[in-house]
Image (cartoon, rainbow, N blue to C red; front, side, top):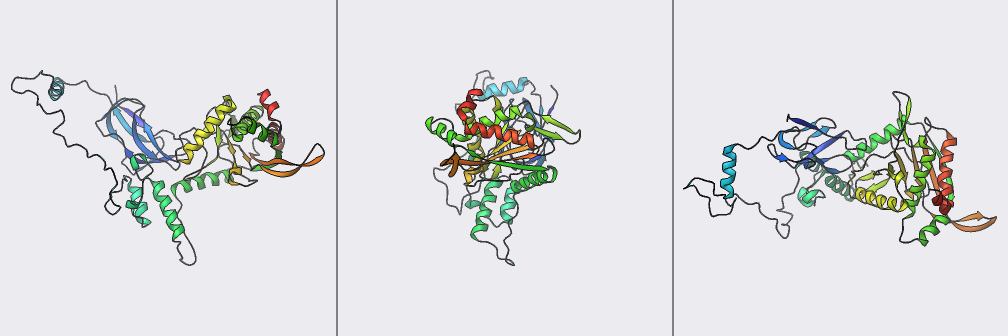
Length: 406
């Protein structure tokens, strides 16, 4: 078998680079397919990267703390040579097999007793003044040093208590809030890597996409009552997600991207529904893969799973093809959202509150929500956008009939 070069894979969410935080293997180690070999930190999360090759690690192409672009060499994995007779003899000798020359018998001591054992962790952490911070990234150390932050005061959120960049950025942000700078009446907070990535994505969206917004007030009372009658069944967001994927099947042009070079609208065969989530590091959009094939109950399970993971700072799902944003969770009614490039649309749902409403010619109190829909005017016109909005709104206002049709 020839040497095989493992390139840093596409980590999704439009990310183009990652920082090598910690190598999990050494050069010369033997690895199996899908064995985690390195921890990398992106603008979104800290993830373990598994190798697609089995063999012996020949070269690690990037040192810890370095930033590597997607598609650049990460590892070279070579073939594992069969053991030589000498190696076989040594292994048998260490194992105490008895297949050794007289006078060179195995020791009665347990195998490996001559090696220095790794000290087990203490039951209680040492005082802060003497604790050695678990941090391996030079970039994280430099960020803490530049911000005047003592790493010994931090508890890492990474594997085994590893201090990652997000821990330092959060601590620095809290420090800035507690002790704001008063230089010329200004407070300056450097953009974190995550905020830089968000800034670049949103700036690109606003610069490239001629967006338009439509909105509608929706009587969500029937959906609210259905949800209450089926407790502890799926949540309201799961029902809305089900109605959204059904509407996308009616209007597939909204589940697409625009290839500007070839001047083509590229419609996706599968609906990967992005769910906007306010995570520990900021707004992220994990996706429920193949949401169009799921029942309401399954959507509820997957939405809860990906949102919980995202709030912990872990995003390992594929990039979405359409985004649903429940900004009502922030107790607000409406939002002119920014499209998650390269998607072409985003649907937002406001809070559901009691409002005066006319139903059947009479004034009454109903559960009302406002939906806003932002779309790329290059791929469709207002008629398509309005049709999609009404399909979702009508399903919310008459959920039993909508579910019966699905």
